[in-house]
Structures are given as structure tokens and as C-alpha cells.
Length: 169
Ligand SMILES: CC(C)(COP(=O)(O)OP(=O)(O)OC[C@H]1O[C@@H](n2cnc3c(N)ncnc32)[C@H](O)[C@@H]1OP(=O)(O)O)[C@@H](O)C(=O)NCCC(=O)NCCS
Image (cartoon, rainbow, N blue to C red):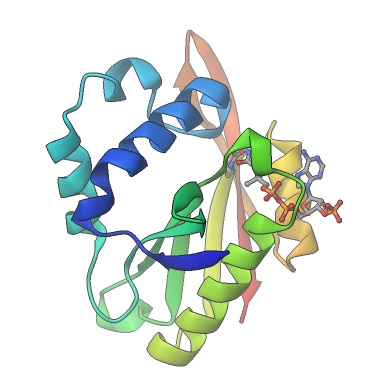
């Protein structure tokens, strides 16, 4: 298993897995398959490029023999008074590879990187309140609930709440 940052040359494999994520777990994300399926590979490359900046910001993928099986986005806040804080977004592991510790390994890798390379002290993650599997994962990784954003999601006429969780590194 290899974990490494995604670059624009990974745009096509990222596009494929991102669309699979939106198809298999639409409840987990704020974007939808219906809107993302029309985007070009260049648009996915731009998304990767735009999210990437030194020292740690970007998309990170888990690879098994060159196959991308999971990813997440790490973003350290840029304003001078918030640089001790980072966010993780869009975490996904391909259903064929779940339950084998890959999400945990990706998180361990990124938390070490964030702490050592960018002096990040706290990592936040936001999750749909109904996504109990993800919340169990985050609790196991040491996250605690920080707050609830009521009715922050509206999809197909129904409201959902999001839970914000934090881990001190
Ligand atoms: C959530 C997700 C990333 C977990 O990936 P994973 O590689 O299977 O996670 P891990 O194997 O590292 O799981 C570690 C722990 O998390 C918890 N966990 C993970 N998936 C779980 C599930 N479906 N139900 C209950 N607990 C779960 C367990 O405590 C597990 O430890 P255990 O295997 O010893 O019981 C994956 O299921 C996924 O991509 N889901 C759909 C997208 C999503 O919801 N992303 C999060 C958005 S906030």
C-alpha cells in the first residue's frame, strides 16, 4: 500500500473513483453524481491543482499496486490566526476494500504529516448526522463531537444535520 498526494496526472483515475463515491454513497457528500458526471477530466485536474499548496494542502490517495482505492482532501487554514487548524474533506474508500483499515491508515499518515510539516494542532471533519459508520470511524481515531449544524443539508426536499468533529493532534 502506498499513500501519496494526487497530482493532475491522476485526474482521470480520481474522476472515476470520485464518481463512484457519489454513486455508491450519495448521502455522504454535499456534491451530487448528477452534477459531477458532466464535468470534464480537465475540471477534475483543476480541482486537484487548486487544492494543492505547500506545505501540506491537497488530495491524498491510497494506492494498491497503482490502483487508487481511496482518497481524502487535507486543507490547513491559511489565515494567520487559524494555521493551527486543518480540515479533512470527502474521505472515501472503495467498497471492495472497506473494513481493512485503509481509512485509518490514511488518517494516521495525514495527521502525522500535518503535525510535523505544518504544526497543525487540531483536525476537523464534518459528517452527515445519519452517517453512523463514519462517526464510529472518527471516534475510533480519537475525534470527539464539536458541534451540530442543524439543517445544514437539503437534498431531495429533505433536511439533514451535520456533525462537526475534532481531534487534537
Ligand atoms: C467511512 C469509510 C471511509 C471507512 O473506511 P474503511 O477503510 O472501511 O475504515 P477502517 O477499515 O479504517 O475502519 C476503522 C474503524 O472504523 C469503524 N467503522 C468503519 N466502517 C464502519 C461501518 N461500516 N460500520 C461501523 N463501524 C465502522 C470501525 O470501528 C472500524 O474498526 P474495526 O474494523 O476494528 O471495527 C468508508 O466506509 C467509506 O468510504 N464510506 C462511504 C463514504 C463516507 O461515508 N465517507 C465519510 C464522509 S464524512
